[in-house]
Length: 453
Image (cartoon, rainbow, N blue to C red; front, side):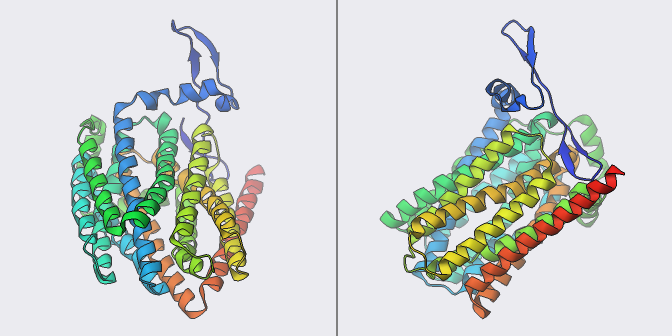
């Protein structure tokens, strides 16, 4: 499977056909373009990943760590948003404290992931975050929460490019699309389990225990990562790496130049940044929107996040099965779905519609499904298009753009919710998401028409 650009400049994945062999090694068939949906083809395509011990180990560590992440995030949002009754801007600052470190330190962290042992970076990051989360058990003011989350974000900015780079080391290019989809499915499935567990633990034992459990998950993740193979770059990659050991500024420029010279990556990154900004504008105010309902409760927020995770899981599952798709087209569909979801949430909340325990999770499911269509195709294409020795630099730039959007988005959402109200803020986000999807479709259509002549 190889990533290419078609005549429209849109990234697509060439069909990777695997022969099916019987038990004695004789070829008995092959998979056609549409047979990837067949159970036999599905098993064969992913057999390499299942047998890849390094990949399985990394995904196990990611699973445990991601469960802990959602445990603490839901606990913090419900604690601050419902129990402490924080203002829209105070809620937005929660997301800002998590996102700002990635924007500030993303390029440096990406370079660190290329310069130093990625396995060591991940272990150190996990252990330090475990200690920081423990401090949250003693937090009695929102300032303490801000400081701890900002510090956690700093080490998360190191962990993410290190994990992406390690994934590139242990997974072949032909299986990278499925590997990225599996990774996204893990994130979304833990988004289902995490809020469910968090809701039960917070209701029964309080937020402090949730933070303690989260700390333990980071320690467990570090322990598992310790058993990752010490595989590094190939000789060719090491030679290229030695040539690129320059200043952080130069390395960021190298990563940016690589993206700029790739048509899909440059267009996709702009679309991703704008979409994420609009998503965060609304997403950061979900707890404030729920407070507008007479049926508001921590459970409702938990159900919403859980349903969103189910939607993300399903989308990731489908993308893992059908890896032959045009990434930008799916990104446009995802933006449209998000716009519809946020707009409908605001509309139903405006009329204080009953049965919120049903329609809110359903719309959360749509939002989660759509969000995966925006993020996974782009990130998978970045993995495929990027050489292993450039992974940290390129993802450092991508993460910086994405997290810069997650800084501006919550701040803008908090400001709009304070000035004009949370309902207009959601309608604005919804309308703009639909608009950029429509504009992107027109541009895509025009490019296809030009390519036909």
